[in-house]
Length: 611
Image (cartoon, rainbow, N blue to C red; front, side, top):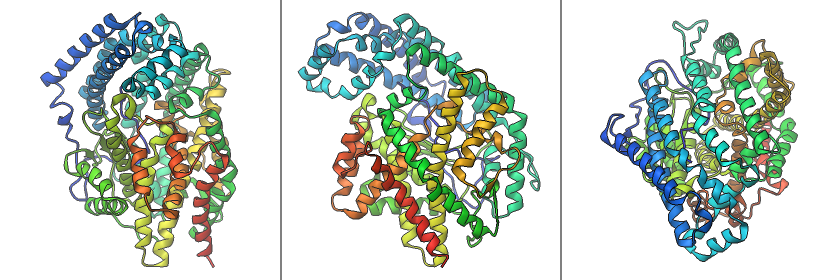
């Protein structure tokens, strides 16, 4: 149940701790978790965890079916206390590691923590297995007999959704025990390999790490973008056998697990954990794919015209517009922009975001070995979230700040639900983050003083939405194809490259020419390794937020209170119940068209500016 940070948007990081022209960039103060890795509280909590797990098993194993409602409530609360301590330890280990993934001491501490927590919690495997063997009538009578126990209904229902896929007690314990040398080990190999890559880019004095090289793909100079893309392709190709091995192994491991658990599809486990019906995801996927021509194909044709090109190369996809004046946005301005947008929506939202800036809850600087990307990690409900950025002062970095702060606000509000009920399924976990981006964008758009400034803002937002919706659904299709193909046998690097290119051409459109080497760009995307099929949550969140924002725009009175209630619910309600107060229903295929129409409307406005 405890959560290690998951990377969200794979974006920027650079070689030294830099802040050139950016101001004083904040760093994490992790002392709210533990003062140091050798602090006595760390030893105390590991020892407590060992003892608590053993006592839990001694008290409850083989007895769950006979518990009355009061005893069942105590059992769940005991389990929740264990979850908090394990989560606190792993959060601390994980956050320190992501600050410097190439630091061998930090890597060892995290690996040792994973081993220790895994061994300690192995005796708990019986808990979900026995809960799932309780018959429906007995469980329902328990939940109705005690309101405090009934509050845990969503947790129990999500657990019991795994009943058809449950293995024997012995096998489940074996898989739990083996986990640190399975997927977790391959995840770590991937992370450390990526953090250690360097890229020699023509025109640059020194080799660059991954995120600094990716950052050049947004450079105003086309030659620099091309040089970066070609360097990325060269290094990815040099390491492609290792990346193919990682993906082959993880996909095969998943296939074995899915086969034993009788999962109907590789995606099914993700749908269960997201508490979303497969048909809802399929409706989303089909709506987005059908919209490719009026979204990405149409927009990139416009962009080619703006850049004076007949065909776009892949290094032109995120190029700034010719009318866009390059500038670096300092940290103070970024903070004020986002906080003003949050405060204008509701002062409570700004109040919730303020401690991230003042209490050491953000790590923004770029550093050698720091994990790429950005995330908001909730840690545990008895502490607070932490946000990681790799801030380089780009306009999109401001949107990343707005995005991750949205997660942080959501996590703070949901914390009151307690550890087991606070975690929001991934499909709704992106709601507050994307809504925070939309608030920030709308504030900037309202302040635009010229047609060129408005055009630049609209184009940037459309590109972000295409990256969030079109690109992520294309990634989802790639994963579906990859896992289906792996079930037929080992995949060569060329096999995986071909699967990647099959979705790229379809999603980006006919205006693109794909350079030699682009076929390897699947290899650096961490979601495929860390969280298979995670990516559709971004498109789900963007579509949901577009519909939510339209509801806010059309009927603003009382919207804020309903919005805060939705965030406070965490994982305690199904998406149908959370969206009902807004008159929205994600199971309605027409729902997704509402969100896609907002993107299409922005492109309409951009096309009208050409007249």
